Length: 435
Image (cartoon, rainbow, N blue to C red):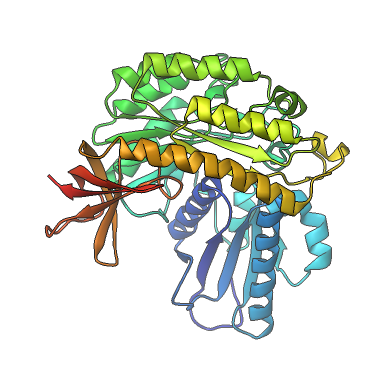
């Protein structure tokens, strides 16, 4: 691709939004690199002349961040600091016509499934033999792995099917091959991601095959931790828990977004499950695997949510005592079923409710962390920061969960596994000494 600069093109990829977007950016990077195009993620040197912005269009805050990032780089292009600006990802998929009208200075917009078209802008070819090959943007010792794309669920608040389409599983063979390739690069932990993990295999194998996939991945030599994110609670296949019990390199960790606990809200959200069924599911999972760490995410401020619904959610948290909880405030999204409802709760009230709920969880988190004091855990070292090493137990995923502050004079490096005795507990972090 020729531009007004004489030096070789250098592409900077900026990724906004979730880990699924990050994987897409890594795949794009791998394809560009294979076509002999210089590419970097989040380039701090600013010595690039082309930018590809991989956007998020999930909720209002994410959309605003994406639009602002596009505008910032269009401004750099106007000042002659960039030759080209390309935009891809969920925002571009969902609002391409609007964006082309409002920000015409962008050289081209692409949807979520248009990787070959992006490559054509660089006179590059999509190399099918590179399927599963990525240029990692994460530290070398962990990686995300997307096992499927899209979602067939009909949750009323969610715009993901509009941007990512229907559920499409990848084959077990392709995922095992990718895992083996990642391990060769030094990856020790793989986090399995999808819009909906438990639906895996229904489209290509005609039945839920996440347990079979887990067994196949657990057989990959050198893969020390496998972590599960985004499991849907309705019709949850308990065989997953059986596999966790059988295979030592599958973390006793499950991320299961429940979204609410009031039956009124669950019904309005079309979650296909009741509070009573969720309580039974959590009980059954813990009965089979008492040491499991359960993470969930919740939404507050959905249209029609009452103070009674909020109180019910708080009581549910106190009863269930989840290990990890994240919370979103409801975002009124066009073309979703909930958009027909009146968004009748102010942004301030949504935030206040979210804070109330997180205060309940903060107390639970502290109590659960205090129970770990004096115990020894296997910890994966992530980084050194401010002179101290930071790592995680198998019960913590990167960025969203607890960190372990490791006190030691010994030299460690990212990717090391060490034994740490916990000496102090905080609301969301632990501190300990090397054994």
